[in-house]
Image (cartoon, rainbow, N blue to C red; front, side):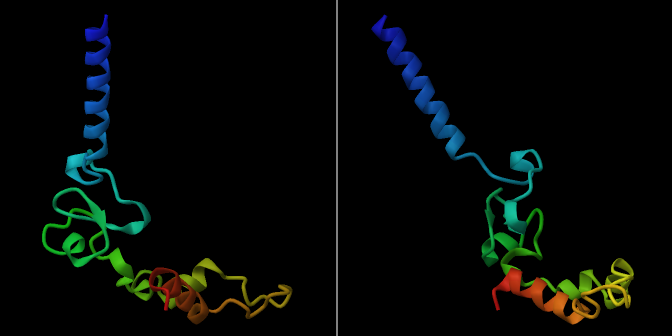
Length: 113
């Protein structure tokens, strides 16, 4: 009986160790993406350092570390189309939310600057 219990506990420990060292993203993890827009390294680990986001990066390679340019994703024209009525005279917040304020806020949240 003790041998069975010892074997069971040993297998349980080994499986928890294996689960704790498994890759986090990319082809090594069934195509999973990293949280928070982090880069997925060629080895299947998430991070924002150049080692994760450069040569061999599998996904979200340009977004790690806040180096992306939100203005290239959302143009002034696209912003104006999304919020057509933001300058409507009947809107109490008329003129409050501008494209420049949107870009500044989006950049701050990715870089903290």
